[in-house]
Length: 304
Image (cartoon, rainbow, N blue to C red):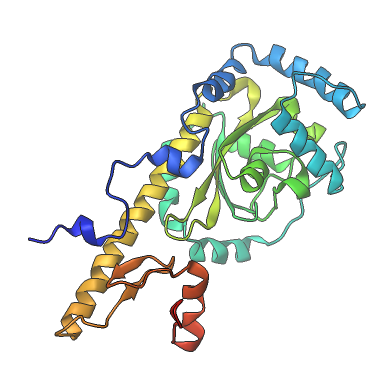
């Protein structure tokens, strides 16, 4: 019997899923330690960050502000973000948002992610947010009280929370940096966000490595979950694995279709949207080359 794993085109050695998705900091114990330490005495941590914030924006240096956060502030300020009054742009109204949700590749996973990360009970203290690859909020699920608080910040469906639109925040940083991150209190560039903490992780297409969106958990820092960063990282890994499994199933269905219609497979090859060989051998193809095939129905191999 043929081992289907040898036909998948994916590496078959044990996969470091978190490392593959989240990058070099995936197993960084120090990162998680810093995230949890912020919640040991959140008010003290927030006061220290606010003092550091004022110093750095006045041109001084303060070690309480990490290089990552300071770099984000600098990029946002260069983009024209106003720390004292920036509001995010609204890209779409709710009817258009519904259409975008239906068309979005993360739509099938929203119920599972909401079950894992959202808390819409009376005692809930955060919301789960899913944003597009451009940082536009598409879904918000969770505590009604927190949703109402979020509305005062325009942290709502259709608003673009990219770094250049509304300053340093976890969604925007995930888009720019391509990795999971947490932004606590006055690490946000805009002052009206200083009572919040947000944790976010990017979600990538395992086939093309294109950014699909960002998974975020946000809420007032005083009542936030210390493990929020770990949870969004796990949520992103869960979606990535489900997408990967779906692609493997699609590969097998495509191979079966070809076998049913062709007695011989000589001269026949199947290539995935990412340029990965599914059947036969077409080495050297790239996603860009494969992307040129649909308009013409033809694909030129690297050797011409």
